[in-house]
Structure formats: structure tokens, C-alpha cells
Image 1 (cartoon, each protein chain N blue to C red):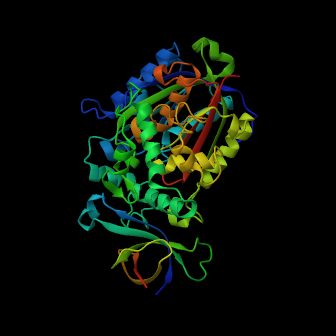
Image 2: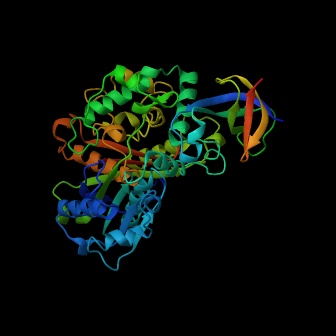
Image 3: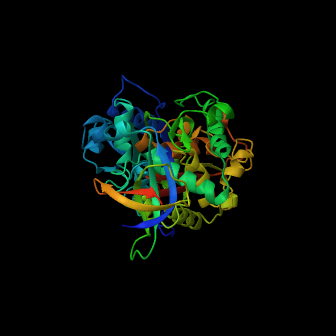
Length: 393
Length: 73
């Protein structure tokens, strides 16, 4: 199994667990990760002794919390000793990248049972410091020195997308309104508050044209899954979910190195790989969790995944196509915008959210069509992307 | 000094600590005139003087901490 081939063993998600996302002054990074890991083990009806390797997605734990060497710090607290325990960092795609590499190891036959966890503890720092740490996902020698923030990079993408395709302010805001509508129904979401289109359009500017409601949240939280070889799935779950396709791809870190900033080549490459491996196309995908770190990112992802034609993502969203009742429901969880975005946890949390829908356990947010779902996790302004397709056989 | 066309732009209102005193400030990506072998032909820059928009013509007027500064021309 390469970046799109299919030669290894089938892999399933056998257990999934998340903490609520939010600002939790009384919980440190490790206790969050341990809480999610414990839930995933319980969900897989097993204990730490079954886990043969531990994969951690984390973006900036050392900067947010002054703790390095995070993977064994967490896995030993979960009761796992002696096993390989490694942290993966790929900016906001850290969780997705850890998941990608774990799937490969099980598929290749190196391990039968592994855990992937993602965690970030962000709210212990003031917003200006958080902004500085997040900016480190960009190019420190050019864009960061120029005063670019993370929102400003996506603001420049939005500006050019509006210029090239006629995407409008209200299109961006429609994404925020829809994700808040969904998040309001999610008991684990950080911001359970519906917003109006007028509120979303008139919030205070962060980096023009993006305002406060175009930006995802600063969050604490963790998510974890237990993966196993498909032939052992029944030991761990009555509702195993199969990893049908997965691919990761990369691109330049600096936005100004790209020919065209209104599309993410790494996203397109990862999508091609995942579709090819799963043997499905964009039309067949029934629902998706997309990386809406900013409203414009969800719009571009829709286009790069082939859900809509280039330039049509904003129009499609504004017309309701991505709502739970729409033709292509996106971020029924509330997305990063409303659910929260503990950076390193996000990629793993997206997998948990897709699994929840596939298992028909999403409560009020449950979608009618739930047999084939996709998760898309983006790092930086597009330098890493992981696309995963999950479903039943 | 280099010249070019504004490819995209933003005005930053929420800045990292070290730029907090500058807000609001404009950051742009300029499509440079002429050849840029091995590159994208673009550069990230700050703006001096009046605010610029996509497709405006700009000229380099200096630099700060290695970052070029452009002005509307």
C-alpha cells in the first residue's frame, strides 16, 4: 500500500474516543490525551497491553506547555510500556499524519493492533502568543518575518479566490453559519451557539477579508483511535469501520512559492491517492469532515476534492448544499469552526466523527446516508494534506 | 529595485506579539516582473503608503528585517 496503491492488509478502526473540546484550565496536555486514549481502549473492549505501537499527533506541545518527548510521556501514562511510541508533527495535519503512518504499519503487517492519539493544549497561553506559535507553521524566513499570521495566509487565499471566481463575503459566512448550526447539536463541541448570517458577516476583522467568525477556535482537547488488522476486528468491535483509502501529500510551506494559491496541490494529490485506493470517486462520497480552519479552507477543499467544480465551493455552500439536509453534508460535527480546533487532535477527531456517523451513533446530527465518509486534514497553508476514506465493506 | 503586480493582499488586525504595535498593517504577495528561474515569480512583502488592491502596480522601495517593502506606483 503506497500513497494510493493497495497491496497490504485491510485495516479497520476498532475503537474511537474523544474528550470534549474547549478551554479546560484544570486539565493538562497529558490528562487530555490519557482521557481520549482510555475511551478508545474501552470502545475497543481492550486494554493497554493489546497495543503494539503508539502514534501521537501533536503540533506544538513543547511551545504551548514546555514539555518535550510527548509520546512516551503519554503512552506510559496510559499503561503502555516498552512499545515504540512516537510523535508526528505536520502542523494542523499532525493527527492525520500520525493516523496515515499507523495505517501503513498495520497494513504492512508490522503490527496487528496500534493506537493513534492526537492532542493539543492551547488555552494556557494568551492569544497573541498562540498567534505567534501558530504562525510557526508558515515559512519563518519569509512570511512570518513579514508579519503574516495564520489567518492572514488564508485571508490572502480568500482575497484571490474572490477575485478569480466571484466568491462573496456571504459565501464565506454561510460556511460559518452552517458549522455553528451543526456544532450546536454536538455535546462535545466548544461553541454550541447558532449564529445568523448577519452576525457572521459583521464580526470584527482579524485579517481582511476574514473576520472572527471565519476563524476556527483556540482549543484544548484530544482524540484517539485503536486500529487493527481487519482479520482481528471482531475481537475488538461489533462495529469495525474499514479504512478504504488513505493518502498523504506535501507541497511548499510558503504560500508565495505556489503558482496558484486558490487550490492546494497536496490536497488534490492526496484525494487522487485515496480515491484510487478505495476505488470510489467524489460523487460516491456521502458525507465529509473537512478541515475548516478558516471558512475559505472548507470552500477550497470542496473544490480540490472534486465535490464541486473549481470556483463553485462558495456558491454551493451558500445555497445549502453542504448542510445536513444538503446533497453533500460537510462537517456535521460542527467542524473546526464550532467543534473546536486543538491542532494536533483535529486529524484524529475527524476520523472519530466519520466513524460515529458510519456507526449511526451521531444522535441529532446523524445523517441519512452514512455508508461512505471522507476526512480531510490540512497542515499549514497546504504543505501537508491527508485524505482518508472510511466505510463498511 | 523590483517592480510587479499585487497578486493578493490582506490587512492584519490581530498580530503576533512582535508586530502588535504595527496593526493594522498590510501584507501582500507580489507577482514580480521578469524572470525568476526556479521560483514562483512571487514574493511576500509589506506595503508603504496607501493601501493596495489586487492588480495594482507596485515598486520596491526598501526592506525591513530582510522583507521587501513595496509602494503603489
